[in-house]
Length: 108
Image (spheres, rainbow, N blue to C red):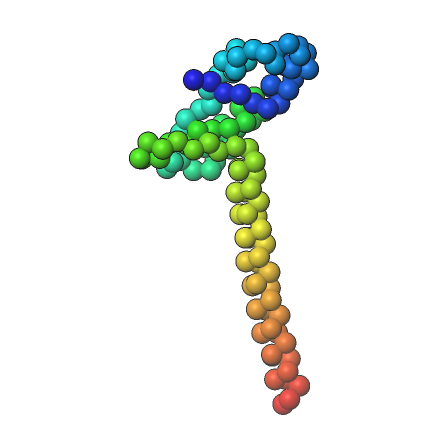
């Protein structure tokens, strides 16, 4: 088994347009690494790099999924947005409490 990367394939085709008539196995690179679904995102982020843009993830059932650098970016972005939203909710609660205290002080 092997892999085909769009960047690598385009690069090869630009160097040699005649490759378009070749069989896909002739332009394949090494296979993507395979990890278990129980691995954490840190492991995936160590495996995905410029030369290796994806990881294959095997579930207990044997089903295999592909996880790309774009999936990793999306997961990390979601995590960052979640943290930002959690902090903004906490700040909003503090502002409401502060405002309430001011109102109580003013009404005394």
